[in-house]
Amino acid sequence: MNVLLVGGGGREAALAWALARSPRLTSLSAAPGNAGIGRLARRIPIAADDVPALAAHAIAERYDLVVIGPEAPLCGGLADRLRDAGLDVFGPSAAAARIEGSKAFAKELMARHGIPTAGFHIFDDADEARRYLAGAAYPLVVKADGLAAGKGVVIAQDPATAIAAAAEMLSGHAFGEAGRRVVVEEMLSGREASCFVLADGTTTLELAACQDYKRAGDGDRGPNTGGMGTYSPSVWIDERTASEVRERISIPTIRGLAEEGAPFHGVLFIGLMLTASGPKVLEFNARFGDPETQVLVPRLDGDWLELLAAAARGELRGMRARFSERAAVCVVMAAGGYPGGYAKGSPIEGLDEAASLADVAVFHAGTEIDDMGRVVTAGGRVLGVTALGDTIAGARDRAYEAVARIRWDLELHRTDIAADAISETAPLRPPRG
Ligand code: AMP
Ligand code: GLY
Image 1 (tube, helix red, strand yellow):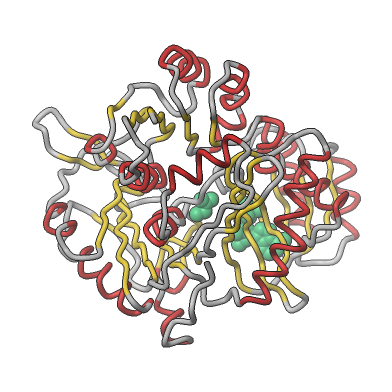
Image 2 (tube, helix red, strand yellow):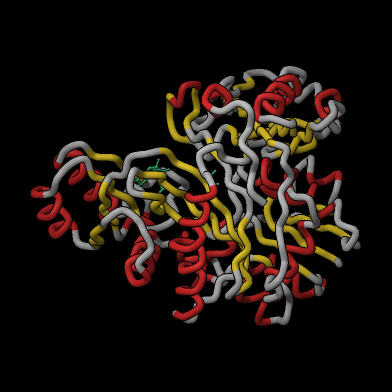
């Protein structure tokens, strides 16, 4: 198969690594890719959110499969355009991707189908929001409806904070159109976890669960980021929780979208809160997680290309995804200053040395090749260093051993990824496949 992969971050580097190992692959192209992806794929210089140019390129090349990594082109309708032209696409239509692109859509879908989530109210009028918030019980969560790069969520302890956040969002100053509606939610408490299911429109196929470390600093301190590290399997999702997620969340969500005329082809990312009264949905994403993909991908005992193509073609029925008993840990190495301002262009040393360790994969995220042919930093999250091990502790030690071999000016990483998992549960509970 000739495959086009859309995107150029760490998630896509892990997907490129997975696709490149498939015996079914004839050629791999990536738009735009990054320095690491460029070792495995032909790079096409089109930005991941340039839907018209991506569509024109993919249709002209008649790829056998297009795998869309990030949310922006999904919400922008890239999958629709390609499917209309007869191509097989891993990634939902714009209508189905609203499950990520509009929090109000996702909440109303969950309400219609009885899917467990925090109680909520939706507002598009600042006066109505103010009236409600003035008399509500606190704490509460105020969210911008649309894509806000993980920044459109305010946890408010009092009416003044909530009213200010809602007014700022509804004014359009904070997030533009993404904030023109707000969702006000009940605050949930518990532990967060990330679950993933492939869907081919009707059939779902469960993947392994992961834990993501979202804060910039050790001990979960500092600002929110896209994710500073992950491990899989999650030690917090036991068989009973997994079956609740399957029966009460994954299957009804995919069925609900299909019934409402928006069948979902791709991967549904379920951001969960594990509460005292069971798992509840915090958010859905219409794509793989980053850096969750960097720990999911190496744990599959099987062919990712076969699974992604089956999801694209409506052929998941009867298929299985078997995950290895081994654990994976990914440590993100970021540019100093991330998630705020950071420098680009620093040469990265030690990449080959790190990648030569057994059971280690160094997935590039924000990297480029400079004029002198060196691999340099080109983004906030620069690398995702993943290691496999027989236990989470073993994978973690190996990942940090690899991290220690890589250097650049002002490099930054957390030192406590997966540390809580090994203090609370050793040895690793057997993962479910
Ligand atoms: P979201 O983009 O909706 O996932 O929100 C980002 C983060 O805000 C989540 O990962 C949670 O840490 C937190 N959050 C969102 N909604 C809630 C909620 N209803 N209760 C508690 N925390 C929440
Ligand atoms: N790591 C969280 C995300 O991909 O949205």
